[in-house]
Image (cartoon, rainbow, N blue to C red; front, side, top):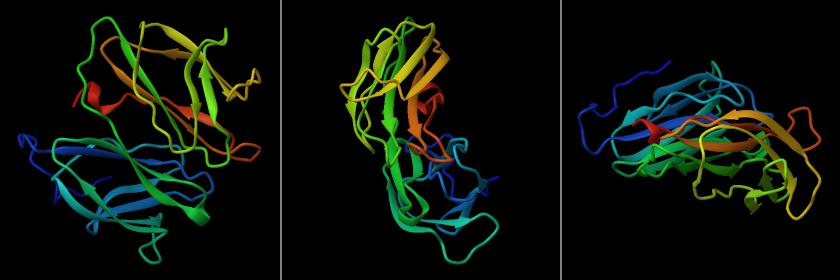
Length: 211
């Protein structure tokens, strides 16, 4: 999937790490280039790449429909500081698609807790509360492109619900989320309300769990 001519050596203390998330609901699969080096090929909606190690610095990022290399849908610059971890998301509908870097802060984990945060990437969804089924709020009044802080939770299997802020209406129900101790997770809300690409969540293990 990747070409690696510009990656930092693994023993370089200034290495940073990035992965790419395709979160643009009506965009086709894409190829992603950094300084004209292919870093993601045929990346489909709702999918992540693996983390890749990169030298800190400024990168030109171009995103093309898969298997093409003309008329990029994104052509932008991205600065990667040293010793950081980022999830770089392609967000919004195709007509307004853009790149949105989300830092995975380096934190010290706990052997008795899992850590969870929420990122709202649904462009037409209102502000939401993320709650447990009994209504207990984990995150309150989170708007589009907002990134919450991590909260500690006891490791176990959870069910979460998304509700318009201040409402009891459940717009998304997500059961069987297994959270392990000593790990960091982000709940990404993607998709569109009332569309063929419906609201959904992705809950990957974040890089600060193991990088």
